[in-house]
Image (cartoon, rainbow, N blue to C red; front, side, top):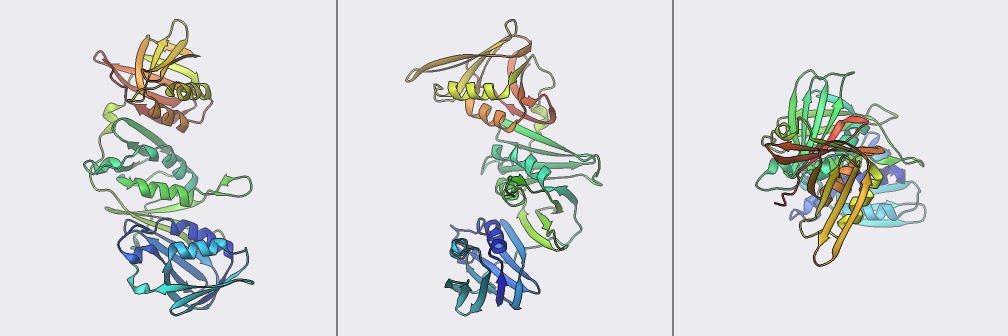
Length: 386
């Protein structure tokens, strides 16, 4: 192998691949990346056996070849180099890396020991904007929780139907769902799968990355391929119809909980609040919360007030009052403040709605949503204090 490649192209693709190498794996090969030079492209591959990533960069290929090297060492070295073209040449047992004023050698590994990243050969199931997909994932991904007894809640649930995609996650104490409208490009057949949380985060990191001096998120068309136990997502280069990044991941087996059953159908009380003020008061009150992280909300519709209260016998207590538009009955309910903060933070509108339900005389879940966006809601279970 002998190539010349712009440093920025190489640096960008290393950022996508090096992150998922099996750094703590007992298999040495998983701590490596695979570099392949063929035709006009340098391909970089990395995997931890659950997620695999391949990237392609345009490069001047003087001699084709394949080599495996330590991912962390190669990436750290490339990131330390000046922004000059980089010459890379395989001279066993070393990979020579040279710029205008620097030269280094990294010991190579046997490329035949690197695991093959599987590729789905069928037609794309669907195409979707990277911004739409990453925005939806970012609103739900943090709620999923690792669980050996209930692996299905360790991931993000996707349900594709004719005109919508529902993306949801739960940890049994809270739930979030984002609906993506597909009115302009309906889906021919239904499908449902559970995406591992790690994969969801990598999708956001890779396809939702920031670029440009103004920090605008790039937006590109992604092609999504599915089998019963695997998903792959592919993006393409702007300058040529060639793949730029391919992410392949296993799917979580099992049936996702029928969370639709816990979504309240009606509400006893609705509170319309300024989002930033509500978030600030929750954070302040949380400083005095007890071991269960509980804070109490006392809703007073006749005064259009909500009192936020917390008490800890070892610290003291705090009470604040927030004004808002309140409809319905007077309520007193306790929530885990961490869950409230997470939910409020996912909603970006200036105003926020907190809805409190009741079922068979007992307080039901609280629901957070935006008055301007009906495509997203966040449900949090109350803390029973009686």
